[in-house]
Image 1 (cartoon, each protein chain N blue to C red):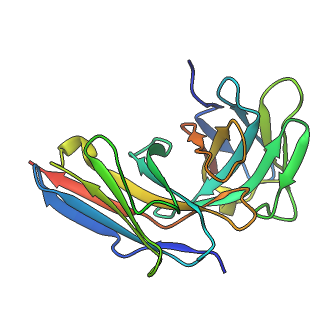
Image 2 (cartoon, each protein chain N blue to C red):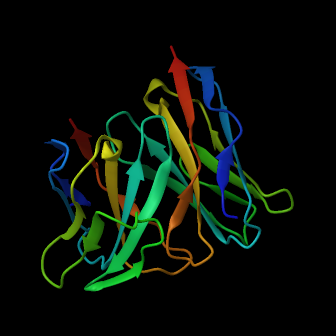
Length: 112
Length: 115
């Protein structure tokens, strides 16, 4: 079946450290993945996406890595800041291509 | 350029009442998705609509829930005869298309509380 999950429910880092948030997916046919950031009381905010024909994609302070062999996705945040504290979700398109399937999320806590 | 607009932001209903949640997609977007989020959980897909059409409602409960996206006006998620288990945050997202590489943008959500 389709499912997306994250390895750790929480991650605590110090300001300035690099953060790595992991995600495993089950649908080997998935061809599109997105990372979202959700702050308390707000809707998910698009961070970065990656297509299955890529292994890596970089944005501003963020990098997404895709390993199709083991069906693993990761989000790397460089020089983590207190404003990065939020819940991070990975999501993949469902088999029909009509919706995003979300994992449960990783709560990132950044301390000064 | 306004983002996805949802209203109300907070909605309180007594058991048995009806709840209507509204979503105006981003300008130029004709595809709308509704998701439900329980506390400490991820978002669960409910329904995907295009103008005047329901494309995928595989995540919608079979009873009491309905959705529409009329030619004019916002998309509406309607919950009839609400029960306490309906209490959740309901998010709407929109996209310009459904290509496999199309990102969806989310609204701020409506937090429904059933008392």
